[in-house]
Image (tube, rainbow, N blue to C red; front, top):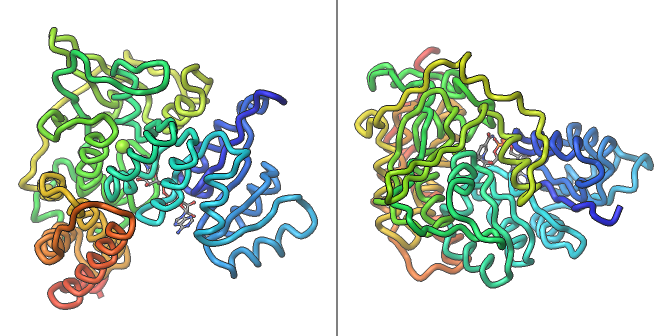
Length: 403
Ligand code: NAD
Ligand code: MG
């Protein structure tokens, strides 16, 4: 099997991980799951190992790794590794061709960076790593020659609509604007007063996409679009003013590129992440992904509207963080992660999420220039500041109100 691409899937038990394995399974002549990595979901990982027979499986901690080893017994040749060292090893392994970076949150940064430094084809789902350390990640990819292919559906769409050279480098010749589409999330038409009492399950019930809980809450608060604005600036070398956010509630147009001659190129498709994943795995060729063909006649209407930054202040906060530069985006990201977790645990209200982020951005100083150590220190300072703000100022969220 000379032309088989060895793929490491970081975050294999999550939403993106499962879609990635689904695409890999459709192309056994071409793609092989070389290594899988997950947090603590030992049973799901054992099933994946028995099915895909990867050379390595990585669990976040030693206990989970021991449990996985016991479950697998002598049924597979899979070597079980653990922790950050294990992740970095399978991200940079000499036999690996492509790395799907689909761990959620800041936890995904070191392994994504390791894959970029090792010159791999990096399929970037973990947007938080670009938000935190875009400068470092882009420089690492440039220095090593790594091909960084965006998997986030909007960025994948933009990549498909930009002029791209044979080495996968996107250019901006003739481009006047990027139109980043947003679904608007489940509360698109809700008043701010109604959003005060939303529950985690309501926030995670996205109208179009089925995703992990953290990104689902981000989509509901529109912080996801704020993170994506920052992600797009790094990936395509854009200034924030070159990007317009357009709310498109059907999630069929995944983003657009406007050119100086008035042309607008769009990428359309059903909201199913297997399309951008197959694109990343196959580029520059196209692979069958299992996604149903688009039926525009059945859809009948596509709508577009401006976002409302009054009701969704996370968008403004992300813009301000990117304008501040240095570690501000990393601080914004860390505060958001803490706030989303607190909301999911019922400790704060949905509408408290932007309050936590704003207070943290005010309290944690912006540092420059960026090194990994500086980013990690800012990330941890922001986590402490956000947790302290929650403890000091915020009343419990929906769970306490109901009891
Ligand atoms: P998810 O919560 O469904 O899955 C996360 C995966 O990461 C799981 O396999 C989990 O075990 C693993 N993980 C978490 N912490 C880890 C750690 N410390 N070490 C090792 N593994 C760890 O999340 P998801 O929805 O698949 O999203 C993953 C990433 O992709 C996020 O950054 C998200 O923003 C991005 N993304 C997701 C979608 C989507 O449709 N789900 C779309 C665009 C971008
Ligand atoms: Mg997206």
